Amino acid sequence: MVIECICIILIIFLLIFAFLRSHRKKYAISMIPLVILPAMHLIAYPISYYLSRTFGIMEGKTQNVITIIALIISCIALGIMSGFFNVKKNRIAYITICGIYTLVLALILILK
Image (cartoon, rainbow, N blue to C red; front, top):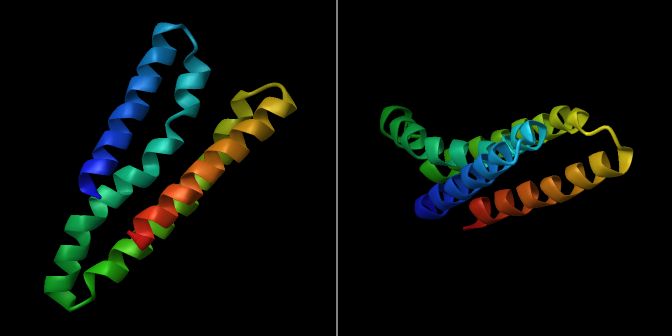
């Protein structure tokens, strides 16, 4: 899932770049929480390898725990970033769509 996470990160950064080019800074900043989960999943690989070699902890379980922690951090960041939207409908739509995306991505990364 390394290549998939890298592709997801690149696509989100392209979206951020597009928002910045269209002078929509708030929208660009609100896309940042979507990068947290795939980035931390990538970081989980070397951490789980190190913990496996040092303490004998299973790599898969460590990666899953880090992914769940990333999901929690991402959801908190989504809640904070929703404050950028003035209209309540936009805020609810942002939290719903991005939350479902993050949850489904986390399930895919955990279940592989």
